[in-house]
Amino acid sequence: MKGAYFSKVYRNVLEEAGYPKQEIEKRKNEIFNRMFYGAKDEKIYHSVENFMGYVVDTGNHDVRTEGMSYGMMMCVQMNKKEEFDRLWKWAKTYMYLKDGENQGYFAWSCRTDGVKNAEGAAPDGEEYFAMALLFAAHRWGNGQGMFHYEKEAQELLHTMIHKGENGQGGRAMFDPCRKLVRFVSEVDFTDPSYHLPHFYELFGRWAKEEDRGFFLEAAAESRNYLRRACHPVTGLCAEYAEFDGTPYKGNWGGRHDWYYSDAYRTVANIGLDYAWFAADEWECEAAGNVQRFFCERLSEEEAGRIYEIDGTVLEEQALHPTAIIATNAQASLARYDDNAFRCVNQFWNTPLRSGSRRYYDNCLYFFAFLALSGNYRIY
Image (cartoon, rainbow, N blue to C red; front, side, top):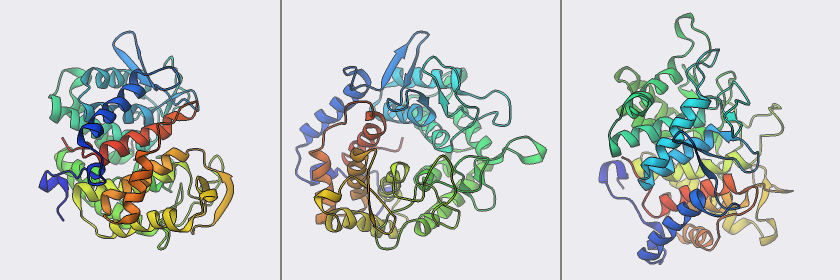
């Protein structure tokens, strides 16, 4: 199989599962409209004065680089340039760090009025900012100043891998020897869900010329890393992990060595990497392991719990159960069997989440819908 980067063909897994193309398209638009312009208990996007807008984490009542960059990716995929530009202007105005150890990065959390909650940065936001900006440059063309999307992306990517060189302050977001992304630049462990080899492949083609080799190596190293981090039977991985793939046992704001919130994104990323590049057949195996665990090993009562990566079911309920359903379905981009379509059908029959915890679940839900409908595309 050739990935979509080479074939220009994007699977519509939802149509393969028997859902009408017209209904898929209608529902895609409805999801975006509800998340961006829906009722108070549905939407996560807010437009504000001075041609800006933000995505709010409704569970934590703040604005995060994760959500802002996710929102930008959604907008470029949906051809929503105004909303994209509003989000980017808000991020550059309020989140960009102009000085200090993390100069050149973005503060990972702000209040909704733009006041920074932290001076630290989280690489998953930077990765999505850069990819969304490059797609915007290719889809809409570059503008002036901060709206010269390509230049902004290239400068950010350069900072992410070179910061701290030549006696400069701060640290790179990628370990320079391992070519692996850090959880945050200050530490030497990682988050498996931050590993986006499908993005790195594109950065390796579109970053500054002197940075392209690094990102192509990072793509290969991240695929190898995911093999180490994902359990060989269940396919599950920890939220945070050491660079050797073993679950992180430290205490960074609580426990993170289990299959919990951040970790759900990993199998979705594996599915999308396979759909775009089909560079590693192991990804099909990993996606199948996760789907087999959820479809064949769990009872109905055990669904939506927290799990050890070996599959041990814990008593605690997951904070984001809709996200589990969405990411399991997105893994079907690397599968074509009964469990894959069971996950897709469960996803189709699961509504968007409402209430205070809707932000994270619905972001992953919409990404899964875009991907499974053949609408999460390379521009």
